[in-house]
Length: 349
Image (cartoon, rainbow, N blue to C red; front, side, top):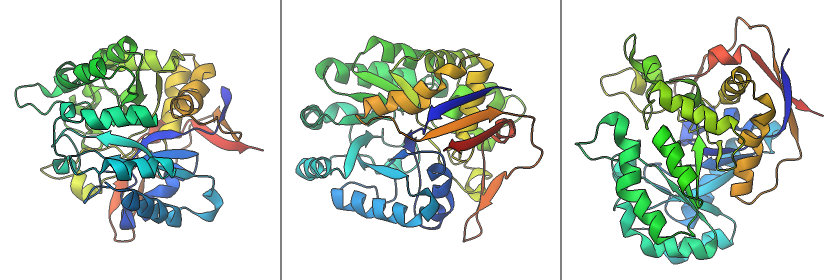
């Protein structure tokens, strides 16, 4: 029976939404994660320190008392409306951890984004001064770029030039999804990458081979088996440039099962089990703690958690929860149920 003990993990990329959806989902991230890097793409977006602080308080008010170890890390939404003086005050006060750039129209609520990545040199210079990370959704929205080539196109057309002009700028390539993305990270020492449970464990045949699976549709899209294999190799290698960011993104079934499928995978309940199974299959469980607990903490300048978790592989369990219901009656489907049946997680006293 396989078993491993790790410091309590951190989730360096998570969507917690707001209102009744926030109330329904936050406990699933708070259960096994110490920190959660909370994305700012609400409607309207989180663009000021005051908005970030208010959102943080709403999150904490929804965290069950038994899970009070969880601390949300707040980000601001990059656009030309961003006030750099306000951002600096937010960073100094410890309210703002990072900023997030979305290509306009790339994903959920990114239609609110304004400007090309190359238009924010003043911001990037200030981020270097403040030793603050730029988080990037790297996906081209050009109409002539194939859906499965959008990450590589964005890296070539936009991020490469920014990294060349700002070699001291810390950049996180969020939810890297391709071998090209892995190679870009390894070729740029100032760039790191988060990897999601769904990109580690699934590829585009799972999404499309037997009919479109709405619950696996996300942005960036699941790519080829070769791309997935490159992500797995990076994750299990122990390389400090790669770490866990779940990109857990809840959407109700009313938004997932319709003519316009919302992009997002809700993996917060079982994402850790999914990653453990990937590492187990690679005979690399001894590297799991680096990927989920140590590498990201080093990037964001925090010590590893002193609390420990034990993950144990077991006989498959028949019945575990597969979805939740919000107070308004919406349902959200869990990702990773198959893997979760195989793993038991417990806190180590």
